[in-house]
Length: 207
Image (cartoon, rainbow, N blue to C red; front, top):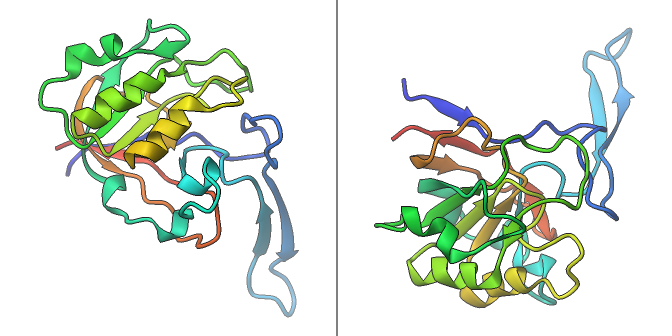
């Protein structure tokens, strides 16, 4: 059997939360007991908690929702690239060592340990890196930080390069124990037809 790597962080009330996002909350609407054979719960949360796929609607007015997007970008060969010493912005030069014959999906590891609390101190993509990847045939990019843009960015230039180039994106991945190299990515978003993002259970499978 092929080995799997779970690259999704836990989702709970203690999940790191981007300021303004709705925290995870769960309540029980039914519990097993006399006259009730099941436990049932109700959940509220931002779809940007944990590993998630942003929809173009998240950063573009009147753009596509997550539930209307084709699934192909989220499933197939991918490359994990380490950029552990890149600093605040991942530039093309930090990925050049793995640029030969890039598959359509690239996940970038920027931190040695995934954060367990919110912090503005995370790496993101320089906008020219999105173009550099798109020019090489990449259709999906992923990162192990909270956003492809810095926490204090209001213009979101990397998000808008994703929109302009038609790339899909995964954020909040956990790549702590994943060696650089090629894998199969499986990270399908839910069919949330009105949503700006969706949680994913992102996994890598050996080729």
